[in-house]
Amino acid sequence: MENSYVWKPSSWYCPNCGTMTTAFRNSEGMMKVECSNKECNIVMVRTDKGRRHSVIDVYAAKLSEHCKKNT
Ligand SMILES: [Zn+2]
Image 1 (cartoon, protein in one colour):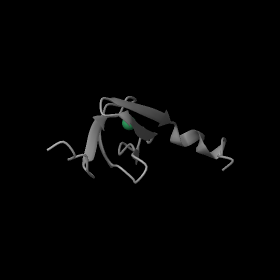
Image 2: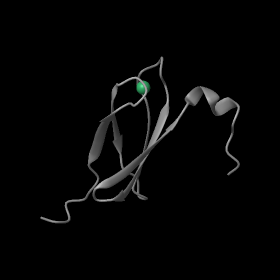
Image 3: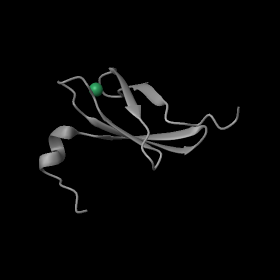
């Protein structure tokens, strides 16, 4: 019963506009999703640090033209 820590979708509210968002975990335990609200359109990346600790990073999608990643 312990290890039902599988590929469940997670839902949370967008911190910017409050729209419910659903994302799926990738192999690194990260969830990346764009807000479905077209007027908001931010990108959220959620990382699970532990079973009771998640971090949600928020990126403004409109800024992506100006600050491209160097990766
Ligand atoms: Zn939003």
